[in-house]
Length: 461
Image (cartoon, rainbow, N blue to C red; front, side, top):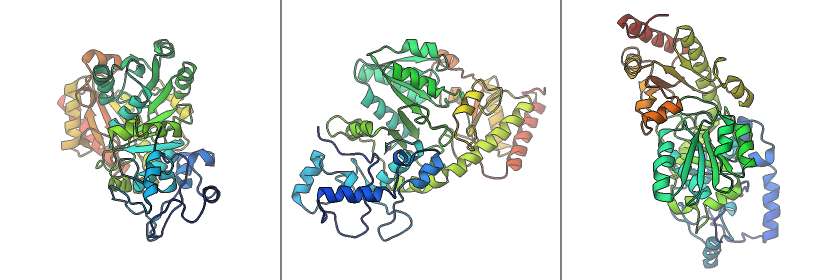
């Protein structure tokens, strides 16, 4: 079956000249393979370098220079690409020549700039391959549609981002005849019993759930999934750098790159990270979900993101540090705080056993105000009275973002579904930013809470 190859762990040579590559470029296939192997010794991928830490893996990943030797890569803004020989085009469409040897057809298939970002994401998550998409939801839907066919079944966590929950609950059954059983992801027996051997194809969950910050036991869930013959897919949007699901046993990782990885709240993007065989299948010319559905990332977006990834580790450490400090202080003030870095969080020890050292416990925390009225009052004061943060959905921004999840990012769920997922009406999700000093921002929070106490909407304890 014809297919175009993904980046996988193949490292095409950098061609800095202005000459368009020909099929052979002055060497036969054996010479090319020897040359590529020699070069790859100095350009290890996550898979070949012995992946230990996301920052180390990113530092070891291939650095793409600009066309004229710039320290930053060039943006390949072309939609289509030329060839020097007519026969080359046929070989490209048949899969004999592809992006692994710097042969590109059309940017919906592969684009050099997007391909470079994909290499970085594969390094970050320690996978053989990755493919970057136009949004987080396009990454999720594409990988599930590749792994699951009409009549098949998915087992998923009850607590998921509202858009993912709606995809599984409403769209897939109606449009694709794909059904989902939702489970308490911490009840391993429930998970095991929900998987129907031969029918269930995917076990899907979030490493750290949106919005309740429930932590999934990735090693045990992966073991159960593999025993039952299903593919384990983890959404790691809430915890890049903090947790590495594939290292813990998962098969596939998806991200909404729009969040922490972007960091600027100005880009919509997603990624699928996993085995080269899966990414190959998703790029198949005849049956690949990425190829045929076309959730293409723009090369200019890929360039922007590629320049931000090198400082992701530094940003995550500060997001996580402030979240832990604030959560600890909020708890001492008598607030009901949910944060997996606190020792009283039900999965604190579990997360502690899974995290990559020195990155912390995540950049989000939740404050349960009990009622939507109190939640809205608190957010209003924090934004409009003390400027602690902004009332907005999304996360991973340098400013603190706040939302009442039940009436916003989880609004696609019914009241019963929200209750099962542990989403209370007054749950305020906070994505903790790092702009300003820690004490400056904390004083703004204290000021808002004191104002709320004075109004009688929050009693002192």
